[in-house]
Length: 410
Image (cartoon, rainbow, N blue to C red; front, side, top):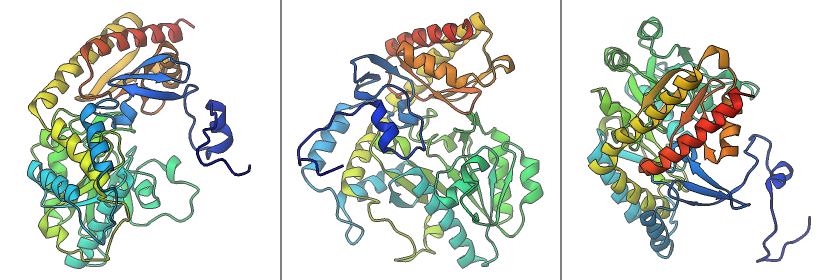
């Protein structure tokens, strides 16, 4: 230990991680130091093609010139004021999100978990104020993921993430995803909300069916419950529409957005209607950094670029490139049982004979110079930049095919 000189840069390697960071991650053995577009370089100068997109975050690739320019100009203007004051970038971003969606009101925070925490608190608060303090049941789904705070991790339907942290928030019920009868069996007049991802991301890249989403909307209306959509991963153009709910012909009561909202800069938003928002008052909820001008200025630029026909229509075209390449790999190696998802959130499920190999394939892919993701032990997940160059898709999938061959051929 000891005091470092103010400007001294210390040499760090992947080994440094094992000594200084809380052991809650198992990162790759290489350390990325630079990115441009859909290419990344590590400490040794090795180049990678990025199909992971920072887990669906860098929707405009790395160091997009417009985002960099906004970061510089806003960074020289105003970074932070706290919620004691409002600021122009937050008001512009909120106005644009409202124009583009069902919403009338926006709350800004810093992460998907915080946006979901706010959404779940709002759903319970609204039910308490409008109906009854006993109307507090939240219905959520197995294999869902909503964040890592104690409330959001409990609503997420994966006990491995919530066990061991003491008593959990009560009155949360989990049922199978895409099973409307299971929801009907547990919903009642004490239900305040149904919380659902239109595409389960961490849970295996599984889209909700049309019938399921429309059925949830009808059940919520019937029981005076709120439909809360977690679009942290599926939103901001990822599905080929600005938000995935647009595919289903329904409107949510509350929607959350994060990840790609800032194109890589931490920012999140919870969107809702005037009626639901009207139960809140100063002091009921808040966040110190939420809605800071630096984050909101960058998010406004990201939204301006993503919410254009050019980018949104390009998503499906790029998806087809990926699907074609994945089908060719499957034809050669008999690897995938299903290629699913929407837009550029793609899940390739491994066949039973390859169960448990997703992490091996991910590591082999990194060795070949392509960054991919997994969604559980049996699904390869791809969430690249929405504007990735077709040439990068071709080259990256060629590297991925090589990695698959090495894993399957020992």
